[in-house]
Image (cartoon, rainbow, N blue to C red; front, top):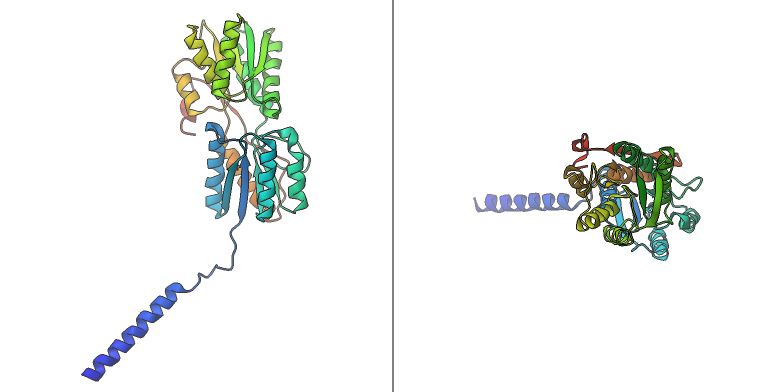
Length: 314
């Protein structure tokens, strides 16, 4: 009985050892290498964070490793970040450009290293370089058409621009200007507030204190529009029908809340998550040797009080 017990103990020990060794063995797909993607943003504000979240969601779904950095709105910093990604031998690079007119050095560096580069949200308009995003002219046009409709095609307009080195700011402004001109409406002031709520508020305060007369605020994004609303409310100005009509772009949560409260007159939905996810898809397609169009459209949609429920939580 003792011999049998000893033998049983030996067999059990061998069995345990086999299980441990089995658990330590490498998985069957250990030879496969996860795709590595680097993404650089100007900043990660409320809207661009949604773009980043869309990238991360798609990267997770595809089993890719994604590294996200922000350049503090500095062109040189963003170029350095791209160069760092190249030295880290990532498989692809995603860029939301600080300055679309300064994108060429980043594209050239990635091309020289043989690494695919995809621009997201802000279009550098470079032939042979994919861009995933929306047509900025369309958003300015949709916004101003709705504002003109609410105003009965009458009134003076002020335009709040994003950073003027950015194609989105220029094209959205152009959309506002073209619709205003079509309706015989006068643009009395145009100035930059750099996409920022605090700067939008400061700009509006300056216009009010300077005695600028206007009926409509066509802002290039929701953050500036909300800043303008803060200044208008502080000055005792009426908002909405019979008062100042303020529009924006992006349909952020804060903007939708303002729209529901009767302060913001309209906004335009920009599918941030769709842009971010589309950028990752395009990058992985390029890594896999597939062809990606120079322009991958993610359409804008007008948001009003009537349909805003469709965009909540997006």
